[in-house]
Image (cartoon, rainbow, N blue to C red; front, side, top):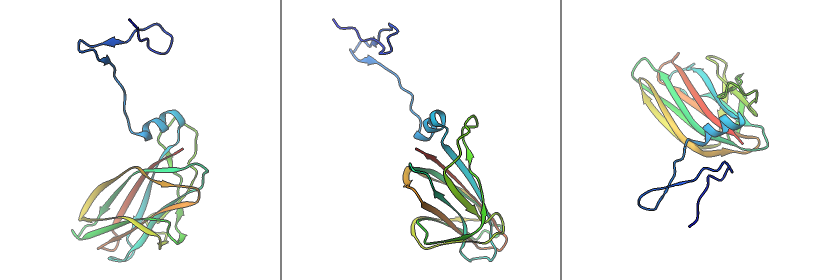
Length: 188
């Protein structure tokens, strides 16, 4: 009869159930957890935007990956403080053809013990600095009514290579409406 050991050389033997199945357990988290824990390369950024002219589509911000590996988009949270109950539209775009203006923003590392910096260039409206995000390919559009928040799960399926950009545009019904977009990603 064979004995299955733990594989680490510590002499522990594996357990078998009364139905002759190996008794195992595993830990399963999303990939972003392991990249943050093991490599310190998971990031988040909050992009601020104030609607300059009600009902007009304006740039909220963008993230351009400048590293040599890949950026995996985990999720985007969009929120609006639209006071009138009117609609706020958010558009997520890949590879915008025109990017200009805005205020630079540095992403936060999700692992506070890591000194790793994100290999990105991030720009946003910052509640008043005009930013242009136009052209490209629309990958997601959402409309929210009144004050609202929505989480868009991309499950790491949107992948940016070197010098590729993700842009976000917004349009609230009321001038002066504050909108926020939080982007979460990892790099490896």
